[in-house]
Length: 131
Image (cartoon, rainbow, N blue to C red; front, top):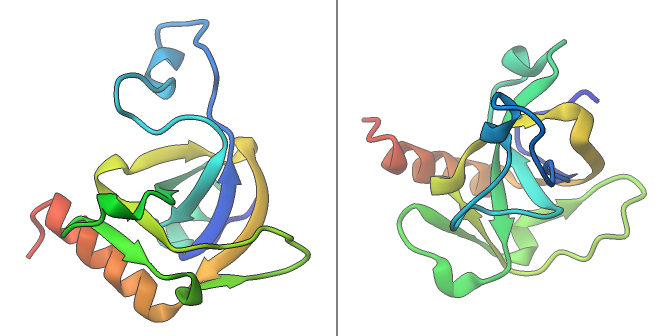
């Protein structure tokens, strides 16, 4: 599946690992797991013709919002296509950035507004101490 920067996709991470290499893909501890929306943050040029993309998971636990867990009001989440997914106020967990296997993406459900994408970029800059 071709993915676009700022797009919101339902992603289903692997449930278990069968090899040492795959073990890195399986979540543990406080990592986000299970089917959930991810915002793609890697550039379109990087995503093109690749089986991976960099994404940030979203959570509806808005009490988690802080300087690097970016509050995304429902009005900034734009539904696209035939998706029936109902957006609600969410948080982009920029400290849980992850490389996604695009073959595990189940559905394109929408995109972030330009303002929301810029805010997520600031959250990532904070996490990675980019100036």
